[in-house]
Every structure is written in C-alpha cells, then in structure tokens.
Length: 319
Image 1 (cartoon, rainbow, N blue to C red):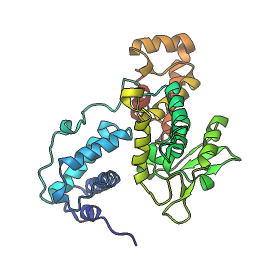
Image 2 (spheres, one colour; image 1 turned 45 degrees about the vertical axis):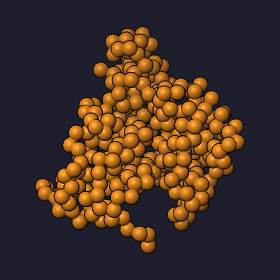
Image 3 (spheres, rainbow, N blue to C red; image 1 turned 120 degrees about the horizontal axis):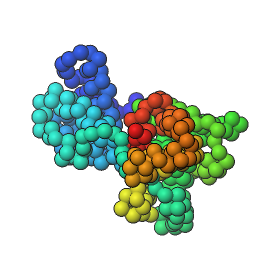
Image 4 (cartoon, helix red, strand yellow; image 1 turned 45 degrees about the horizontal axis):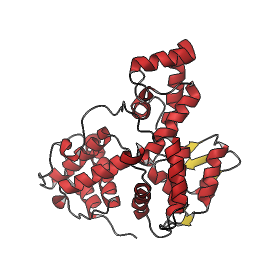
C-alpha cells in the first residue's frame, strides 16, 4: 500500500458548514488542488502550513496546462475553505496577486501555435543529441498537436491496449480532466502515423499492466521534463506565440476550419468581420456549421456537446 497523503487525509477530516452537496464539491475540488500541488513537487504536509507560495505554484501549473482562470478560482475557493477549517486564514483573498483574473472563460485572442512553428520545433527536437529524452518529448508533443491531447493525456496513453488499428480509434482514459475517458474516432493516416512514431517510446509504468509513454520509473516528474524540452526548443508564448497547450488550440482551429470552410471567430479582428466572412463562405447555413463544429470539438476536448464555454475558450465567441 502506498503512503497516504496527509493533505488529502486532512480534506476528508475537515469540518465544513453548509449543505452536504456543497461540502462534497469543496472536498472534491480541494483534492484537485493537492494533486496539482504534488505534481509541482510541493511537499506541504499540513493545511496550516499551506501558504500563498503554494497557491501560486498551483496557479502556474494549471495555467501551463491551459486551464482557464474560472477553474483556477474555483479550485482556490475550495482550498481556502479547507485552510480556514484548520485555522489558516493567511491565504490572500485576492486572486489577482496570483495572476488569476475574474471574467469569462472565453478567450477572444487565439493562442494557437502555427503549424510551421510546430514542425520546426519537432525537427529541432528530434535532432537534439544533447538531451537524451528529446525524441520521446517530440513524439508526445506531436501527439498533442495531431490529436488535440492535453500534456498529461499524451504522456499516459496506453497504446498497446487503447489504440484500435482496425477501427481507427483511440481510447483516452488516463490523465484526463475529471477522470472522464473519451474515444477519438476516424483517425486520419497522419494521426495514426504519429501514434506509430510514439510506439517506440512505450514503457511499463508503476501501475501493473499499464504501459505509457513516460520513461520507466519516472512517473509524473516526466511532465516537468516535457515542459523543459518545450522551453529548450523555444515552444513558449514569447518565442512561438503559444505554449504546449497552444498545440491543442491549433488542432481545434483546424477542426473548425475543416468542418465549416471558414476560420473561427478569434482569427478575426471583430465578431462583425467573422460574421461577414462566414456569410460569404457558407451563406445562411453558417450558424449550423458553427454549431456542428463546436459540438465535435467539445466532445474531442473531453466535454459534453453544447459546452460553449469550452469551445469559446479555443475558438472565440460567434455571437
């Protein structure tokens, strides 16, 4: 049996007020705070010892994974509840000091990384002889781009078991947001070629019977090494116009354009300019194409169709 986590134990033992349903949500969300904190290698063992520094590390890690400020604020609210339950009232109540802003999840500015930049990064990474794990990192970054996977999802794919070559589908079930599995159907030849390249790096993990793309025995520390490889090869907001999560933005931009025949709203200077371009391309049918593309992208992203807050974050708002 693995060693228990004292912060997680503290969540379950904390005395909270309010309806049972609210208490349950607080505890569940606070568990996510601890998960991110541990992935960031922060070792606080008591809620009385959690500080603003720990909140900042969680904010930085979640933002690096492309999580919106609304979700970060929700996680922070739950963690503050647990801190207060143990008499820790020293956490700032102002999320702005952590760089977390109030407002809609929708992002009017595209964060997509251009395909040319992605291909240049992959080429340089594959030719990098100074970093032993550069090839593995390139394979996973290519999967993030080709399949729209999150960073952790790409690292924890179980290719031997979850890639069905006959049906051209891929089950994504490890490292998913909220633990919700999803299946990607109708994989293209280019997507399956990326999966074949990634097969070279399949390793047995610490979990019995599970293989993934992380180096054997390294565990979640590999996620930070992947970040390092991306920064080392200039895949940053400053140098490339986007981060690792920008690969996912670009995949969904392409999905939208392929389905509708026109670019998503955040590729235009204004909503009016978007409307004019969509109308010119698809006529009065453009709203239906927009809805269909968004439903497909929301499902591919691991959510339910109709989650316009999700597609707005990747594409901008159409109205």
